[in-house]
Image (cartoon, rainbow, N blue to C red; front, side, top):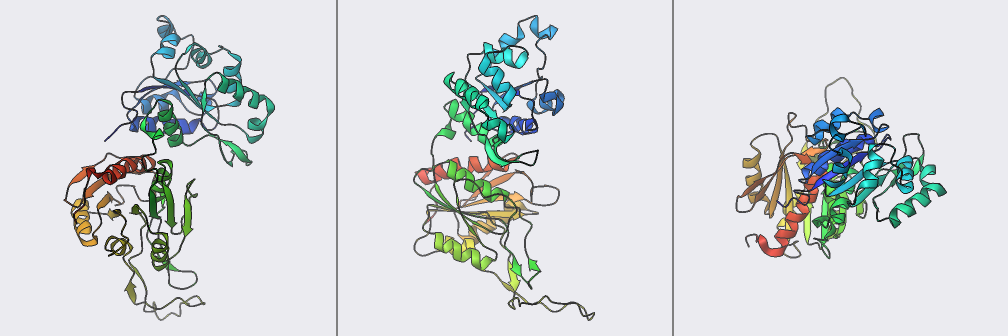
Length: 413
């Protein structure tokens, strides 16, 4: 597995805004990609997150004080400014951007930023009116003129219930931008020119107008895969069941409810180079079509509800006689004997790769932000990955898919 930030050292300056809590997740995401992280917290940042939390996630000391006796005996602020590959400022508040633009050196963060010759990436985060203010625009122009790279901010709701641009970029967006800054693989469009189809979320099989059969899926992993494919340069169609998460950027989304609607949308979205079936499709649906009225309890016990099997979307596409995507990927969400069930599934479905995971209650994967997956090939081979954020799983899958399409993996005919 290629670690795009392996052996890189990042000095992370955490500014004093509510988005500072995201900086803790950024530490995790950078370390997942193989980087070491040295946290530096401003005085304001310590009102939102603690140096102890940052140090625990980074696995090394967090720096806070310009006049720390132990560090400054060896001119510590100069060492911090030199002994890294890049500096990331996240969140970069309006005040911190102003001090950087003005060349201030009033505390450890601004002193290090003034003394460094390293590449600097900032992730602004502030109120929408502050971001739009002429002073902030001038400071941004000054920083960009000085060679500082900027990622974000994104548009969305603010802590003070306003909406607009000002939200700090998400941790994986920042990590991607850092890789591009340092010449890593995230800047490469490894799926450029490819068409990718992804299914995500659950399906709802109606019993009556208010009840349905479904699976416990948040759609986070499928949506993350669609977003990662778009970042990798692919033209992406996402067929999504009912979810409560935002649409990924740069992706065409088709919303469906039932398994039969999902199959129809998948067939309409073909042809594709890669088809990834991450949706948790309900296996059965009520035999009788849902009527317009709610089924009422009458005291005589539950009404009989015969079930019929839903179409198998993965097997249908994997066994298409013509127009089959060159790479068909299925998911296996299991609660026991994960690898055994996944091997049986890949043989039964006819796909090229199974991404298997443990969704038992002990694993905490279903609906969570992390995942631990095993990649099972048609030859029975297994590649197991450590527990990672779902965005990171998706990012790594793109490199894996690109390798398979490039011929380093050839499915049986």
